[in-house]
Length: 166
Image (tube, rainbow, N blue to C red; front, top):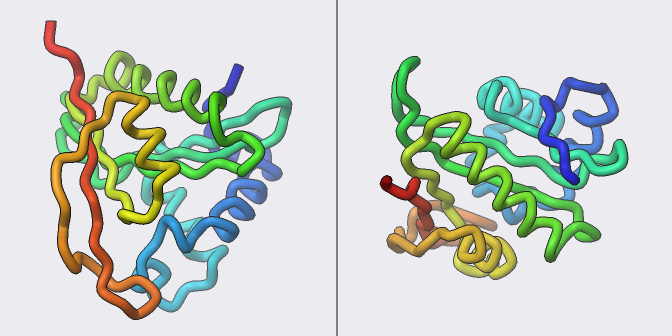
């Protein structure tokens, strides 16, 4: 069963998550993300900026992946919307990522109180789009030429999942 923990729970967790980020950053970031910072500086700032909503996903004392929420809309009393980003080591792709997605989305709605979670995805990232659809996300739109990636215009697809109304 996966555990969602703060990245500084153990020093090794931060380092393992940093390794994953460096390995898959081309699927996570555009040309503007690091803004001249080293990968370490960028990742450390990302963790600080998104805390307390940055979690490493730990299985058998190893980081299987990480997930964080950013661009949060709401206030100290009511969290409304957040943008989800996730990254997993290849050996955990498949059923494990589906389990983690279900657990985390449920946590976002039931424990944190969000009404909507969205994800911005590059159109060529089929694995993440498949995972999002499994977790109940639907495509909401396409932002044409939204950013630069590898010095080329890059489209971004928007997916979202809403809390079920009672």
